[in-house]
Image 1: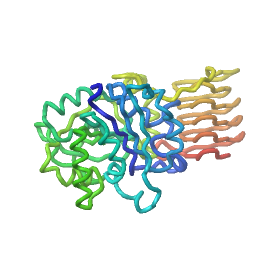
Image 2: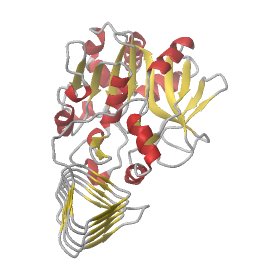
Image 3: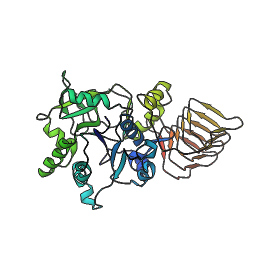
Image 4: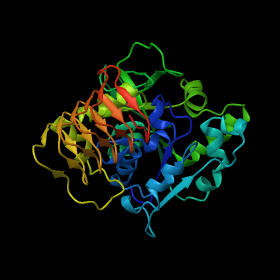
Length: 370
């Protein structure tokens, strides 16, 4: 697909119910899986599919996004044949910022119009999956579709808030939720769309001329009977991560070896911003079972069924169970942390007992002292 397809990671108005985890960062840069960020999966899928021109449409709280993606070098997007473009809103006016994604696409129309690439793949950041777009482009061309929507048949688990769709036996999308509701369907949209770039710009201009500015609600939903919209079923792993419960479940699912291998290595490797740190150290009577422990950690206590990010210090006698401890956390001696999510730089003093439940994990915001 080289020199045919451009990628767009659309962060405009992503559904976000991650509470304190997105208080100072956008959803795309929420830490995940001991060393990654949510946006890493979309970026890696695009690059592994041979897509080397990628635009990230930022919206709010994107300082951490700029820091994480940088020049795109960690995804090999910083050479003469490729490019990563971070496109913030063209204005900071509150009313303009509240408008839909089609409006923001239009504000950066020069980016699209100057490109000679034929197709565009639009993705979100909260769909945690590993996708090869090459067979989907071929399917799109074979069906002579106007738009191809990548879908996943998934009835339950590991789902945050997702938009349901219906598809007939020929693969044609016959119904799509305007937002989130009670449509009787096990098929959800992965919020990944493929179309010709020129067709996208036509939708943008036509919709805005009619006072419509939302991509799915206006450009797709209102034209579902007029356009050739097909669905492509993704057979691989998917987690929809936009609520606290789904975030916790998705991280915990990584403790299953088959899930880890499928998500991070099939069909391609997931890349992230690298940091040079020494290996984790296990000291004295440290005990770790069924957990992911990143580099730079110092473990003196007990860790069970947990996700431990870089640079965490778990002191003597402390027990961390079924929890997520983000970067540079410090767990005091003889403390118990269970069913909890601790953001970066959280300090837990000695002798503390912190417990949530699997349905409602305890959540501590960034730099909190407990």
